[in-house]
Picture (cartoon, rainbow, N blue to C red):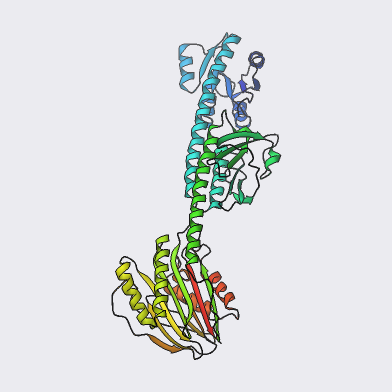
Length: 512
């Protein structure tokens, strides 16, 4: 931005006087434009890039005072110097300065005086413009810093950073960073007010030191967006740790001031947000891996039964939850359990593991579903007094289809037969609450029938009630696919929101 020639508009109806002023200013190194009257001057300041106006007080159409006022009203940062051979007394000078002029020269004017006054006024306004530009960019930097730290995903972080950079520098911008998985992505924005996009991009990080550095490269090296013609690119690299890939912010060089302070600060702020997002992704990956390790590693093979399971953890920006399921054969009976510990955290996942192992242990001892729930409830009240959970336990004899089922506040499973859907209701208190529990529910699953067990993440949505979610499940599940894995996948696609905010577990059993 520095080094651009200064353009001055000379406004005077006297050709001779205008010639002199233009000659003096041109010899001093300024680019000079001309106007003969007030209307032409006002038109030119709207079209041309003008840094200063030298304005005669007496013009044929408008007074110089009126022209000055209109210029200042539209362009407060455009300096104006009045010159006059007639309005030369104190009152004239006072009126000119009062109505917006930055200096007032009376004829005869010496060339040195004009040049010195022009440079003094320009120095002040250029310093003011630099300060205003810096203040505006720092405000944009603050807004962008808030946006990137609030971004829920890595991709949205890059989009917010690119949009912020484009807004700060009023130009196209790109922000490149590496994800926790090692994928290099670029957030690209075509200009201020435009919506950014994320695309793959590869950068050679060789030799980039720790800290913030700035370099200039040809635009062809970063063909991410349509950059301004005949300009290079300034790249700020921020590397916070030796073992991390650097982050890059790329903008046209013409947008930069001396020492590029805002660009460097932006790169460091976005790099800090990227580091936080990487750490969160890493921790979430560890938590999800731990959570999955606590679930069954495979499904049992049971003669006469088809089994399928679908488990989806919550979205990356959500903490892990406490959904779990169990499928195992014990003494010729299939044990099926599904539950949900209240809360979303690594703690909820560890409580889930304790409950799952307790269910397995009590089932191995030969207890029926209701007694299993009673013993698990007493265990929770003793060892986990501040926890609550839902749980449904089923024991099935595969050859006959006979079932004993007990539930502790869990959502009712579906029994589907020939397109007819029935909720298997067994109302009972949640685990963690000491209260009377009903007897086990006993029934026979007919040949060809399907049982669907699920957790609330499948049907609960912020824009719908639980009854609406159950009705939607009943409608979607009425048709059971021949492939139960495909059936589970279809349930998630049609019922779960695009961004899963809660863990989802679905267990399907079909008796052949």
